[in-house]
Length: 563
Image (cartoon, rainbow, N blue to C red; front, side):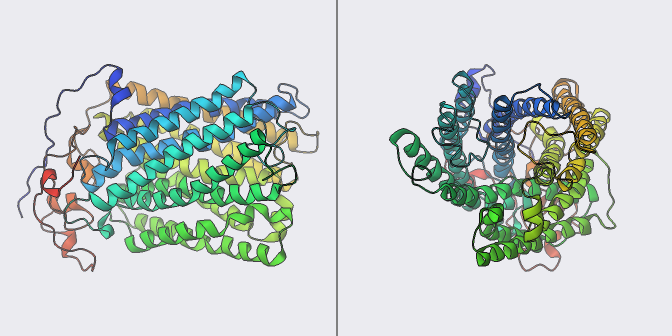
């Protein structure tokens, strides 16, 4: 087999002014806008977190009053989950999925843009509540705190409308991702040849379209209660009903925020271990199991509300059960590292940190499946530590790994390795300094969701250590942002495939042009660029019942992709 260079078509001239971003329907532009939107709100959520940590630095502190603290607490949680982490994950999904499957764009480009602008409008709506009085009922807005007379200002109404907008935008994007994956894969790429990032985005989109309707329905019922004096959750309704609706969405939401992150890790570790992923079928199959089980564990958030004992036992069992497919992934990643030719680049360092931190978060999560432990720790800082180890130590570090890994493809420039490694160590030390000690605070009995606390032995010292570490983490993330900005102008030119990776996005120029590809390599295995560069060691000649022969070089217009 002769090696044929794969080059992208010359990019047609596009307007470089601001209006281009307002009118674009290119999936790559929309992906970058999602990343920028998520980064903006991550900054806002981070500032809110630092102010809360300053308030909690010492017992009896009076920097923030109780109402103000509750407002920051509500804005921080809502911002980080709905306006920071999810948009950044959707940004990577939008940018990379069409490239990885060999498509020219998303199936419905205008719908893709509409979904983004709905999410952006939702974020703006939430922060417009500052003019009227922000919501102060927590990001979960439990009834009756979300009802009048407990929330008399319009803050909860702004919060509900904001989540409806972002939820609708996210659902539209999920539908688009599903149809794009089903309809516009390159010739020769069946579902079992999808890169694991694309596979997990695909499965994740199904979780979104089943989970978000529950939240949207609850939000509509809440507004009927507040505006039309309905009786769903208050005034004779059931406060517990809100928790059922919210957590039926809320626990799958945890996996909505982690599956694409797992996909990033599943791309980074093989490339920098110079080995294909160990047990592809097990990683992909365990993702399907998690998608189903994610809806069967939601009531473990409600063990302390007085559910019937058989219900508690059933959800305790499902909480332990879902750890099995999650553990399978960790074992597969470790097996991929085993005896690999590991390169400790910045993306790989973040991936390794992810492995350790996410595993710790997972282990503490399994402990909540033991009912007596859950009853003892459910309203303590142990939960805060667990939650952040999963979504920050896990998802955020995976996002940082993906940012450094895919930055050359998005910009055509390499990020600084020296500055990247300095920021990495500050982020690792800062993050673990903030949240590791909070496990101890929880076991010692410090309650969460409080703006002050008594001067009990050890509480003040551990909280001060956590607060100082938060500023170390903030400095590390600031260095990462500086690296992003400076490298876009001064970074070394990357070339098309600086990491010697194997999937289709590295077969086009950096950054890719409109239409993405002029020609695609033959897709005979899960590593088409490996096959192209190593004709003597083809993946598709290895025994694998899912790998069938491809069809030579295929032009995108020959695939029937109708835009």
